[in-house]
Image (cartoon, rainbow, N blue to C red; front, top):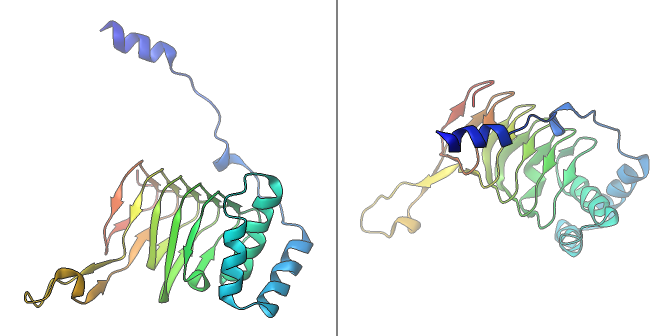
Length: 198
């Protein structure tokens, strides 16, 4: 009816921003500073330093988050954007590709013996929970705000124990190149999303 026509009349098409952007190399001093932090600070100290800049919205706070994140993770590509209030766990197990954008209030949790590889030019929306126990996200993936990616589940056995006290089964989660995960989606352990899937 008329409401649908009004909605379509109000819709508009705009050009892609993140997906069309070219990744610029990070300044050399950022890499040098990150290397200095890695060789002079314990991981706990770097995490505390990261937390000091977690809430800042200006360019300096953003740059410091990226520098410290580079010191904490296995690998960090150029041009990574780190949003406000990023929560990290076992950052030493994370690899993040060039040009990736991490939104505000994202929880990015690795595991001490885990694998978490995030490809290049990935867009991670605000308030996502990403359980990187055994996770590979391909290049050019979009992850909508509020997405939950889970990498483990309790067995629930034996029945005599509370579920939370039972062993965990960790199962790989794979998201293929160019896939798009919609707002609020929940990916459970063992799920594979194919290339280009929506």
